[in-house]
Amino acid sequence: MKLASSIIALIFPFAACVSSTCVKMPVMGYEIEAQKPIIPAINHGGPPAECGDPRTTLPFLRAWNAKLKDHLYTTNQTEMNNSITSLGYTDQGTTGYIFPTQELSTVPLYRLYQLCQYDHFYTVDKDEADAAVNKYGYTAEGIAGYVYPPWQNSSCGGVPLYRLYSVVTVDHLYTTSEKERDSASKNNYTLEGVAAYIFPF
Image (cartoon, rainbow, N blue to C red; front, side, top):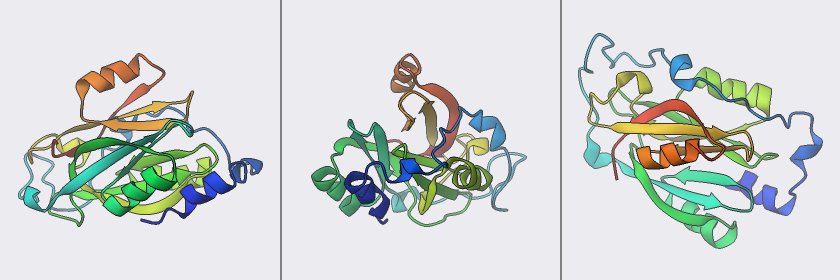
């Protein structure tokens, strides 16, 4: 995954803020908005017909930049190392495991970045990803990986990846920890629902 937008952000920290597209994303009721099928492998009347092979998953790494107030998630160890050594991020370990390529019953986890607000954003909802680009000034950065969608529950063995958002710091937080979810909810973050189901760390 390219780090061009993050590098530009550090070299020209006010470049994007001149634009009128620098708009804060509102808190969203994500779990409700994402209830729509993506691929036919999902059987919405019950458990999926088939699930992906968890042995092919990769660690979904997490880092935090205290200066930019931004959480970064990636399966790319090289990107993580560069973010820590060159971009001011701190390693926060592994959030869980996701697929690097599409498996049965999985959907893409889209990755976006808002340069002006320094916010990495991840969603399985293509319409929501497009809205983030068109309405809130985010740049699409491709697909972070493949996950089980929120409407599938844990029928393939995954755990909830909770999504929270802080309008104060303009930061999206993703965690499988109920304790962290509850703690963040008391500290400026709003729970937006379950973003996806992933394999636990």
